Image 1 (cartoon, rainbow, N blue to C red):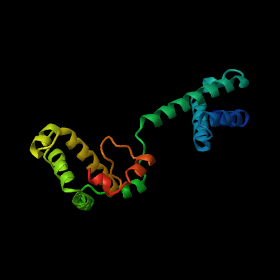
Image 2: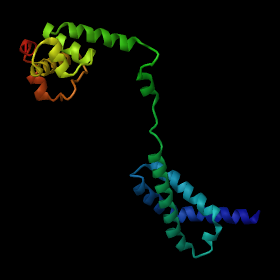
Image 3: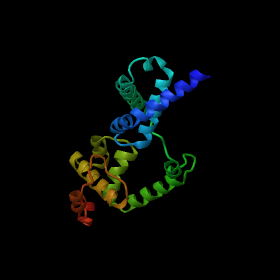
Length: 193
């Protein structure tokens, strides 16, 4: 029983003497995260308590030992956090659509159908051949009786028109920068190409 009190007193003295310096050191390692630094400080002191042989040397020599243990614990904690997948908050889960709920996909289908209806007949025909029937540019050109370059041009302008009518849609290979948005606002001229 007397031995336990000695250990507790030694640990209390160790914390009083070296704790503030160790905490400041750990704050630097945790980029100022006080909670993590305090957790690491406590874990370092637990390690000191678990290794009574560390108390055998001069009391002042404990500081380098404590700093080494604290540094290793900080490195291990960081590696552990980086190895774990990021935690998902309840807000993200609430905003994630239910895969069983077909409402989102139904609304998207209706939006796409309406946007496709606004295209010219020529543009719809090209998109139908390339995207809905899966034909290559050359195959679509043969079916439609037009040159492959015209198929490419019409599909490009059709996708740009769809991008304007569908919020959040981006045509494949088409960046939506502010200059391309203003360039794409040339109205009906794009749909007639």
